[in-house]
Length: 357
Image (tube, rainbow, N blue to C red):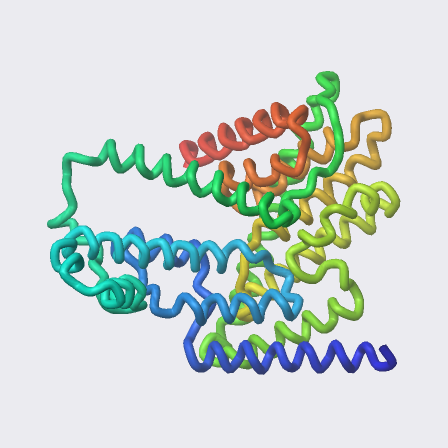
């Protein structure tokens, strides 16, 4: 292309205009999984009327290169649609006789109507003697969802969203690396939280002027398009190249890339280009892991990466279980014990800090 910079500039401007319009029209969208779960816990339901506009906003954010993951907005939409489906089933349960008296097309229209013919959750109507059955059914639904998801992925030939980084082995004599990994994670995690707070404070005066924030975010995306295009999006598409990239580039290049990815993530989140943070954080943590591995050429590199990536991911995100499981999926099963060990030590340290306070 003759004018690639102009082309990218036009794309970023277009993305900013579309996202600014959506936010001006519909408010602070897309809704994230955390927001949906918070609403669900508080109200025992969610407002699912805006699920498709949330998906549209998430699509705009993702296709125009924001350095965020797809999981937050997609899970938020899944939660909303799941509640809608539950309300439909609940309506069918309480109005079964009435529903059966309708003609076929009326039944279909009632079941598919987006807003009407739903029964919201009511604690007064909920049976109190079936909590154990509810727990069992929830477990079965989770297993069913995972099985169906795996089946559909294989049926359509879709590649896995998890990329295995290679093969590795645990080296018992090198377990001492866990201590510097935890210390490094503590420092970087606190620096990331400081960055998050600083950017939030800088953006606070513009909370009522979302178009300004979105435009600034688009300008940052344009800079990354020109200077660091590999850091666009969540990092998932580049993950399969990380092992070769990590072994060929100097350690300081990897560290700079990891830091800039985290900065880019926070800039996007604070300027309204909302999305998930697990993929970008895991991507950065793995890059830092490969950088550290260069200082220990006699130790299995993936063993070093597993220790540092697990420590960094859980510390930066502030939670242990879900990020820990997620980062472990990128490593071979032979390294899972070391991932579990690091997670256990993180859990002990977190509990000790909480008790001391």
